[in-house]
Image (cartoon, rainbow, N blue to C red):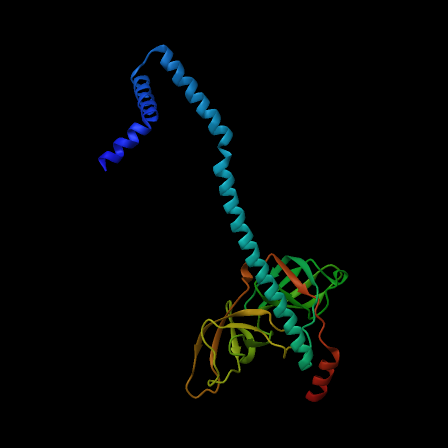
Length: 276
């Protein structure tokens, strides 16, 4: 082993000597503190800074390449999700057509600001700055981004009165979104609602979302109403007591949307004939 190292040293002795002299020179420069050496050091540092500024983009370039790959992967993932949602939508349309089911009709929304409020126990109404000239009609649903707020009960040319869910005369056909149990929503007391006419044997749990059902002739189905806050069973009663916290914060209503929803007149006429 030592003989092999000795042979390498003899073979490359010029390079070994050059490296040794360079190390000695650097050591002497480092220990020397004359004006000439300081000037050399200053020029060397300046040149190093220039080189770093010129070639400093190289690490940033590779980091940018990594960020671009991450963004491309994220874009690919989002595109895949959009495509799958589009396919699900198309599949839903095809299945509805095969089964003869109708699509939920789309309807426009009329935006309005709350300009007045009459908040009394059991008689809560709002006045909004949209009326007949804006397309608002009697009994149209009023919603927010949080869910169902109420319905229009009076109109003028430029204003309308909205009867809130927190009104003693309001009744809404509703459904438990999870278990598909049907019932009727009404105002209970204060800022709470109650889901009525739900037998004790049916599945309703705290935290269930309550939405409008298609049994209503005024409200379109699928609009959020609230969340079940408590359920109770009273001995001797057939129905559960189901408390519902409304999704809409009625104390902070500033803007609402009137859904230009028109129920099927033939359906309403048929239901009235059967009730006569």
